[in-house]
Structure formats: structure tokens, C-alpha cells
Amino acid sequence: MKIVMFTNTFTPHVGGVARSVSELAEGLRRAGDEVLVVAPDFDHMPDHEEGVIRVAAVQNFAGSDFSVPLPLSLNLSSLIEDFNPDIIHSHHPFLLGDTALRAASSLDVPVVFTHHTRYELYGHYVAQDSALLKRLALSLSLGYCEMCDGVIAPSQSIASFLQDHHVRATIAVIPTGVITAQFRNGAGALARRRLAIPDTAVVVGHVGRLAPEKNLDYLASALAIFLNRNPDAHGLIVGDGPSRPAMMQIFASAGIGGRVHFTGVLRGAELADAYAAMNVFAFASFSETQGLVLIEAMTAGVPVVALDAPGAREVVASGQNGRLLAADADATLMAAALSDLTAAPARAYKALCEGARGTAEAFAIDKTVARTRDFYLQTLRKRSPAGGGSGGVWLRAKRAIARELDIVGNIAHAASESMFPESDESGDKD
Image 1 (tube, rainbow, N blue to C red):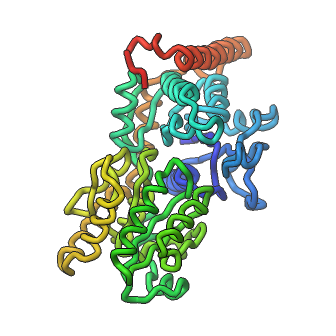
Image 2 (cartoon, rainbow, N blue to C red):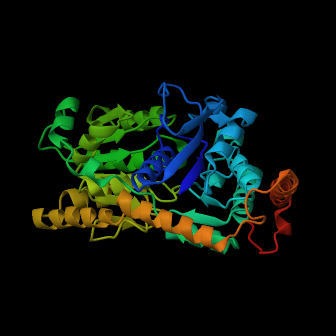
């Protein structure tokens, strides 16, 4: 197959979606498919990238670490047409997501969308958590699903969320895969030496973008309580972002700043080493669609303590690979769970580590790539071209006009839903 992927975030940006798109593209290429990725410019990009088209973008939008892509030029549209894809895979419902719909319409090929993100939970980047903006983002993303031939949900929680909001498109639950070999044999002792963490110390770790939507004030508070109760233990925070200063302040105020190690962003072997240095992984986010870092930690044999939320509940099983706490558990309960796991008898702790590795096996990248390919093929079989191919100029113009009307109609509907939520016939006022 020939697949074009449209994504608003891609390497070298660090984040779950960027990694997901990159690893899916590489997995499909290993399976023999041709993949072309359309993505924005980012700082520190490679000088040459095979199979990637970069789009001019506004950097650091609204103070975030995201880029906002500008419209495709005619030249880039021509490159996509010359590639002649069988299917288009969109990874965002906005910006390049609309471009994906237009390209699919012009070429008369199906479009699949992966619902990576709960967009309504990211309003703080543009409007201080405006309730109207949250409703607008939710309605736009749901409407986008309806314009696609198929939707991939990274977890059953997200599939249920879409179904509960009356999305009628075909939905497949396919988690993001992990290159398990990358995280199986990290050198934890080496990472500890780099950070001056004693070999015998208990280490509670976290990996991810340090941003407000990740519930990091709660995580930092729980870790501070745990470290004060366990004076020989250390914390290990991998990643960076706008919430780092607030986390450091929480640790400093608790008097344990010297035992919490911030590494910044790590990749490759250094990231694997960091996971291997941990005894337990702590996670508190409610905004995930899957929680890729949970699988990475489990691949390294690290049990997880997490709150019951989308992404985590499909992965963490209490007593098998860690501890899943109630969504409303306070920080003292998470601290207690961290203490329980780190103080568990050797045999019980080893069983949790083995359970974590066993859980991770189901998320091996080659397995999830195979499931994605099957969904592509299923989508292609269900949809026959309207005109026996891309058609002539008139047919293409008709499809383009119809698609623009769909896109504008979705925006108008979303605007109405956000400003007048009482008009929602489903009765859902969230």
C-alpha cells in the first residue's frame, strides 16, 4: 500500500503523538508499504528526511512547544498527487487534518483518522480553559470523525467516549505500538551513576512532557509525601515543559529537592537506561488516550502506580503489574501505594515486574502495525471510488466543493454547539 500521513506534530518534537506517527510510519515501511509523512517544520530538524514533506509553520504557538502548520502550497499538493496514495491517514482533526480531508477528496481515496488526543482538555494553551473553547474543540473533533471513512481509537476508553458521543464512523481499537527491544535491556546502573543515585536506593520515576494537562501538581505532591516518608528514596523525572518550575517548587518546599533528579528530554539508549533505573513508575494524567509511557515502563519491567483514567485503566491491573487507584484518590493514597510497591517482598515485587513485561508484549510495534494495516485494507474494501479513480477535472471539482462544504459545516455546527450547548439533542452538556 501507499499511505500519506498528515500530522501537526512530528520528530524532532518530543511527545506521544510525534513518536506514534514516526514509529507507525517506520513499521509500515518494514512491512513493505510506502509512506509519505506531511508534517510542520520544527527546530533542529534533520537536513534530509526520506519520505517526509515539511510544511512551513508558526513555532511555539501560544507559548507551547507545538508548531502550527501553514496551508500546503500548490507544489506540495502536486507532490502528494504524484505519490498517488491508496489511503490517507490523518493524525489531527485541525490544520493539516483539514488538508488531509481535502487531499483525500481530490484523489478520491479513503481517509482514516487516529483520535490521539482529548483536544477539549488542552484549552489552557489558548484561552485559559474557556468552557466555550472546550465545547468547540470537542464538537470539531467529533464532527471530524464523521467525515472520515474510519477512526482508530488508541484505547477502549476512547472508543467508548466516541460511541457515547454518537460517532457513527467505523471505529477500531488499535493502541500505539512500542519498539519493545529498545526498552528491554536498559542499563539502570549506568543511569544511576550519571545522576549520583545510590545503587541501593529506591527510585520512583516519571516520563513525559511536563505540562499542565498531565496533572503534575498532584504527581509532585504524591512524590513529595513518599520521599519524606522514605528518606533514602529518590525521584527521577524525565522530560521537560512549562510545568517543570512548579514541580521543582513543590519539591523544594517539601525539603526533598536534592533527591529529585530532572534529566530533561532523553531519547534512545539514555531513555531506556532511565526506565531501567526505576523501581516504580508513577502516573497521574487524566488527559491521555493511551499512555504510551506506561507501556514503555512495563517493557522495562517497571510496575506502575496510576490513577483510573483513559489509557491507564486498559493497561494497569492492580496486583498484576502495579496498582490502579480510584480517579479521586488523593495524593496521600498514591504515596501510600508507592510505599507498598517499593516495600513489597522480593518474590511479590518480581511477580509484578514479570506481569508488567507480559502486559507490554501485547503492545509490540509489529503487532499494532499489523492491526493498522488490516484496518486500512478493511477500509479500502468497504469504499469503492466514486468515479472509478480520481476522475476528471469536473468530478474532482465537485468533490472538492462538497468537501469544503463538509468542513465549513462542521465548523458552523461546532460553533453553534459551543455557544448554545442547550441545543445538543443528546442532552450532553459537558
